[in-house]
Image (cartoon, rainbow, N blue to C red):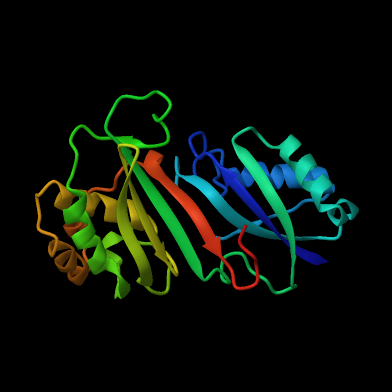
Length: 250
């Protein structure tokens, strides 16, 4: 069997996250079904990570194994698979990889964005979070700078998750202003469940001057989720990049 990576993107609005659920529709379920039809074999994919209900992905990789003949023509395969998928899931490319390549464990960096806007717009409703008041980007970036480095981020994680460690290496965290909106960009070697949404909620508390920028250090040191801010809505969150040492980035 040969191993392949698929690069895809999707709008998460209509799905209960990436991972297959027993009683809800997921992106992985739709992808597995379409692949099984096209390759004429039962097939399961392994994703680079999981996104929660309503979260979007501009870039996600999955791997699968198959020897189906259609895979020899990558362009035809991508076109045929896209034709079987719903409009809100798109395949970008098929990549041949070595037999031990792993979409989850081999990723060396992941990046997310969180988008906030301040006016009523029906076209942003499921793709950005509307706020009434504008927080201070300067205060939030002072706090975001304190996230950089290798730290235990238990305070931003959902409880009772099945992970071996809550230590992550954050290499970039910054708010930028763009066309009247605010975008939070963050990159790390790995993320915990609900981590980005909890970080954004905490930074907004600081941006609205309810806490000083140094409060982020107190939250991290506590390792207590109740010290961090509210988890912000899923609609504004995007997985934007997953990096592997052996895959050229488009």
